[in-house]
Length: 346
Image (cartoon, rainbow, N blue to C red; front, side, top):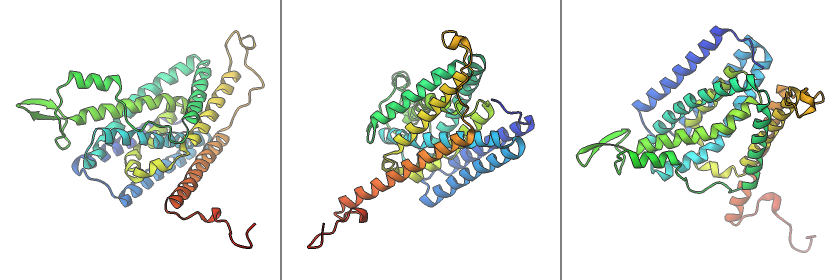
């Protein structure tokens, strides 16, 4: 359901986050560099803090319901974004983007993604308001996505980035230089003006995130139907993505069980959507077109608890596996695997 939030609060929020994004873009453009771990961690904490402050403001302005929906949606979008960072790493590596320019690429890509997602959210809200049976489609799609993640399993992601049709078309149509020219999108090569590979990278990041939106947008609509909360959850999840990229870096491949945690989250939300579709059923061939009375309503706090538990368990299990793998590669067994030997051994 949508919430009666003051229009002034919504406008002020959109203006504030827009200003933050523009300021962030200006900083990146003025001083392109490779951020340190300390700098990246500081900015990640700042953006996480901003999201929690906004959740608190939502609780004051609209009550606990919209605040809980925002936190659940933001946490879901943030966790899905972490998984998507692996693909961004492949794109950066595949196109050999200079490290000092990766911040700018990510920042511009995030802004493009927000514009595209805004269109998705408006379209999704309009469809949901008119056709409630679409919850069956969204729910089935999320469950199918969860099954696909489980089937891929650990190490199931592609090790190389494959260009999509749009990027291949850009390569064929536009004249491209063989090398980068700092942060410029156009340069002079062979006596004529051409585009640099940076343009192709931006298209790759933007279109890839648009594909990710097919998973994340239905997922968050399973937690809240309010377009404002859906959009702000996406904004706050993506705002710190650039710093998170540099903070995690090579650590992403250590989160080996993250796909299973995300699969659990998506399967739960998919099931929640199906239950909601049953509770508002209007399909004539199902229960005579009447709502199914036994379909329970899942409150926001349950959603938040399930999402949080799935991500914590997946992260903890990944860290345990990584520790054991490192210990074995160094020839030292982890403490919990050491077995006594000698005369007293069992």
